[in-house]
Length: 355
Image 1: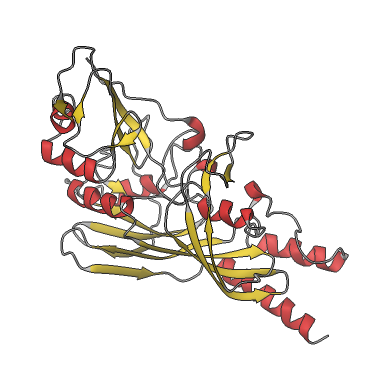
Image 2: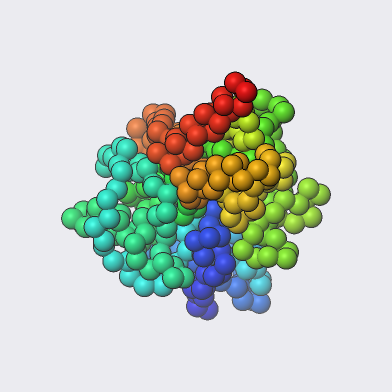
């Protein structure tokens, strides 16, 4: 029996369709023979994966990266005849060797086990499908080029999660396989702390709220995600929000992810009638609130120019350090484009109040 290293779903790997969370990509698949004897899945995989140990496979199972017939299993699961055993990872398989490129990195924190980086909007995270250079991973390859222990092509280390190309904010990078396994388990078990700041269309009636609804790929447009309220498709998703400011026809909100699904915040906010400002994929790049005057249309046009992407920033990130077991919490400034956008709306709201 041989492993089948699968090509990635091009629509999942298209940067326009990456996520704010924890979409997983299948790297290996094995189908058990008809005569397969009952065997623990960790032993089953160790015999078939090079450069792997039973301990590593057990850690991967704890992190939800070992699936049997599409469902996560523990390492003591016994493989049966014709079981489909998959190994999934948090990034697509790279088709080519990643080249080091001298791209500036905004490093918030670094030690021997982890690196925390503040990604600017417009920077693609992973190479693939038209973006084989100029990505965050290419920048990491340059940063670690003199570190003999870090291999950017090794999926056992590197970025633990992802954010969209046009979303800015904090990401954690694992510098060792053990660190990535540990951090991966924290994301899988939803013990990390992730908060985003967004500007959305429409003022919020409730200061605080929780959006619950399965998120999955649209049945009509594969490049869009949507909410399935009845749960007939997609995966369970929960977003908590707190309104920071209501500003005339938009609101500034803080969103906390309880789950991490593709485009979760963008889709959930659209679902409750508040698409992210200038989110072209989900209809936020049009005038959705306000009036029809030419003056207002010009104001919105200038706002779109100031922040030419969805107004979403991964502001805070918290996790337990994989070596010291200390709680690590990081915060980042809202980037200049969103800061100016928010200030313009403050000024606009004040001008209305004085009329």
